Image (cartoon, rainbow, N blue to C red; front, side, top):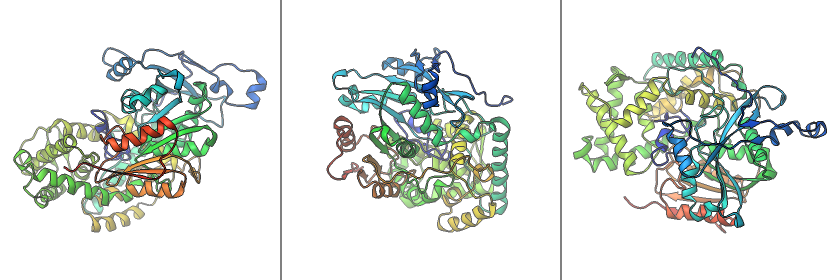
Length: 530
C-alpha cells in the first residue's frame, strides 16, 4: 500500500503511495509506556469498577493538545492547519488484565462545526495492518464535502503504530515478504530469512507480541469511543481497515452507527496468507499498466506494444534471477525484483503509472549492465525493502497478521504451493504463495473473530483492485444481506472514496454519511476511459 508490497493500505494523494500492498508488507526491547500526562486513567468508585473492569479507561480524562511534535513534523502541521487537536488514550496491554500494564493510543480530532446537525464521531483506519491513520482527518474531511462539518473526524494510530506506544523488532527490512526465487535453494534462503525475522521479534518484542491483534485494536477503539463520551461511533475503514471494522461491529454490535468499508476483505480469507488469491488481479493490473506505458514508449523506452512492455518486465525478472541488478547503493535479486513490481501495482492513475514506468526503465537499464541511479519512487521502495529505515511498520504489520491467525509451520506446505503457483504465473506466483515470518511464529493468543452474520453497511470496491480483490467485497455483501455495494468498474484501483476521484462513488458515500440511509439498491459507477 514507499510501503511494502504487502501493505493492505490505500494510496492517497501524495501520502498513499506509502503502502503498496496493503499486507505485505535495536538494543532496547519495546518500551511499554505507562499512562502519560495527556491521558489519565481516572479513578472510579469501587462499585463502578466492579461492574465495569474497564471503567477507569472508559472514564479517563483526555487532554487535547497541539498535534505538532516539532518544526519538522509535516503531519502535525497539516493537522494543525486543519484545526485538529491530538490526545493520547490509555488502554490496557492485556484486556484480561485491565489492572496491569498500560499502553497509549494516539488520536487526532477535527471537531464538527455544524453542531446543530452533528451526527457524532467518525473513526478512521487507513489500512495496513500497521499503517498510521492519525494524519488522515484533514483529507477525509475534505472528501466528505459539506457532510464533514457534521462529524468529529477522528484519526487513530492503532496500538503499536505511529505515535502510539511502539513495537519494533529491529528488522533489517521494512517488510516480511519476499519472492521465493526460481529454485529450492532460493526458497530455503527466504525460509531462513523469515525465521530470522521471527527470532528478532521474539528477542525485541516478545513480551507484547501476543497482544498485537485486530481484536485488541477493536477493543482499543471502544475505549476511544467511551473516552470521547460517545454512545456510538461511525466508521470509515480502508483495506485492512475494512476487516478491523468487521471485527469491531462483531465485538461491539450496539456501538456502531454508519459504517463504510472501502477495499473490502473477505474475513474468511483474512490471515497470514491473505495474498494467495491476488495474483490474477495483479496480472490484470500489470497488463493495464503495460498498455499505458506502450503508448509512451518515447518517454520510458519499455516497448511500443503491451506485449513488448511485458517482455521487458520478464527480462528484468530473468536477469535479476541470474545476477542481482545494481541500482545505486542497492542490489535487486530474484527475491526482490517481483516485490518491486508488486509495489508498483495498486493505483490506477497517470502519476502512479509514470512512477512505476520510470522505475522499470531504471531496472531495465540495470539489467543491460548500465550504471543507474534509481528514480525517487524506486529509491523509496528499495530503501524501505532493503534497509531498516522504516522497520517498525513491517514489525507491526507482521505481528498483527501472525497474531490474528495461525499459519502452517511446515515449509514443505509453502514449497508445494510455490511450485504450483509458479507454473500458473512465474512472476507473481512465487510472491503470493510464499512463506513469511508467520510460519515461524508462536500460536495466536486468541481464536480469530467469527464475523457477524449481517450489518447494514456501505461497501465500496473497484472491480480490478489488486490488493483487496473484488470477490472479497462480493462475499461480504452476500453475507451482510442488509448491506449495499458500490462498485467501481473498469479501474485497477485499491481504495476509491476520496482517493480515485470518482464523483459517482464519492456522492454515494457522502449521501449515506449525510442521511444514514443506505441506497435502495447497489450502485455501479464506471471509471473514465483513458
